[in-house]
Length: 386
Image 1: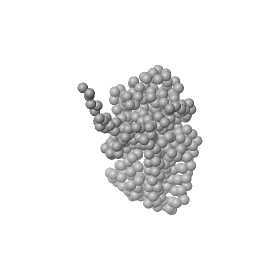
Image 2: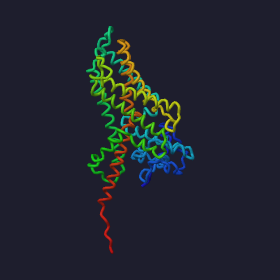
Image 3: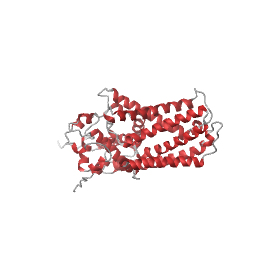
Image 4: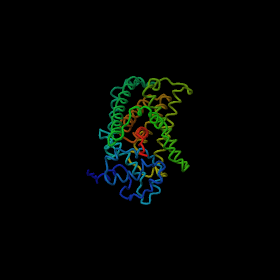
């Protein structure tokens, strides 16, 4: 059977990142130094080789890019300057585009005009929509729930949530097809999807492999990155839960006392979101670590939007307490104009999708390993002729 080589793949990957894939001569240094490499997952060397020969199907079926947490050791020690860590990052962006059936992820990753244009258009659409359906603007005092009733906003939230669930679910199903069905010979028992589900929950909640990536080096930078990421995710998930399920309690014209949990939950989420987004942007500006040496447009857009949503949220809170009605209403519109594209565009199609693709990859890895183990255990033992 002949194998067709796609010579255009290497050039295509250039649109997704800054790795020097053509410089690699497969010395194997990156694989030798990576703390996560194994016989089954010899990355990044194997991935670069597949790129060089244009093996698209093999790449789509691979878990390797998601199991890499970009500690940077491979890039720092590469004798050819091939930047294997950045190659793996480029592959994660490329795979996100392959999983996405709409084609939007590919457009956003390969065209700044597409991504910025979509963000601006959706933001304007939301702002105009709020102005058209908003209630009366009370000007002698702040009545945010008269201007933007929580009931209507809550319905809009659930419509948005439905869209997110639809896009994320359909893209995850494509990921599952590529990894767990295409090109796999071993039979995967259905029960393993349930018995190994704890892996998905654990790694989604903790991203613990990122912390483990730097244990051998005992460097402060690696642990700082993991802790910052953990705090950022906790604040993001908390704010999402408050908005999706407790909006009437959270968006209220009643001013609660300082000790009330509504205020402290909101304060915690806001502080860690500002800290996490600010740290990401500062790191990319300073380029002080290997993780931040290269920056794709997508690496900037999500933290910028997240920081904008957080700051406008702080301003809404401040203006309410100062009794500034018009300022509260206008900044609320701006807040929604930033929040909508951040959730609707960036979560299913952009960088934030890594939040669920990574733990899913570890989950699929665990299922495949367990299935292989069971297959070996159940295999008949050959009878000796002696």
